[in-house]
Length: 153
Image 1: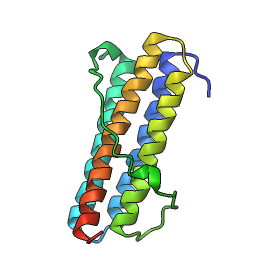
Image 2 (image 1 turned 120 degrees about the vertical axis):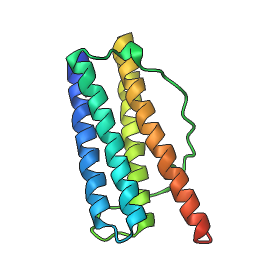
Image 3 (image 1 turned 90 degrees about the horizontal axis):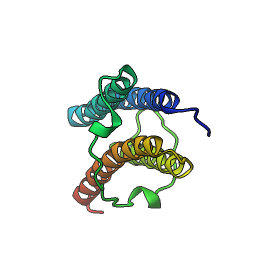
Image 4 (image 1 turned 135 degrees about the vertical axis):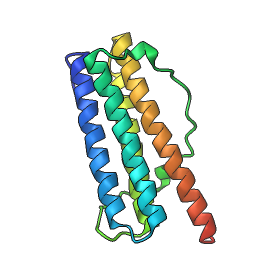
C-alpha cells in the first residue's frame, strides 16, 4: 500500500474508523443484553472520537505533535484465536473474539505501514493510529479474559 502524503494517510484512516463505527454499532444492535449493547456502543463512540481527531488533523485544528505517544501493553490473547466471520446473533464471547481480531489486524496494518515509510512525520501518524488500535485491543482482551474467567475458563 502506497500513500502520497499526510492527507492521503489521514483519509485512509478515517475510512477505517468509519468501518469500525459501523461494525460496533451493528454488533450493538445484535445484542440481547443491555450491558453488551452499551459496551459496543461505547466502542463505536471511541471510533467516532478517533475519526474526529483525524478530521481535526485534516482541518488543521490539531497537529500530530499534539498527540502523546505511549506504550500500550499487548496481552496477545487475539494472537491465539482464529478468524471467524461476523454473523447476526453471535454470542458475546464470539463478538469479543471477532472484535479483538479486527483490532489486531488494524494494529498490524498501521505498524506495517509505519515500517515501510521513511518520513518521520508520517511514521508518527502510523504510530498514533497503531496506539489507538492497541488501546482497543487491550480493552477487548481484558473484557474477554474477565468474561471467560466468569464462565469458568
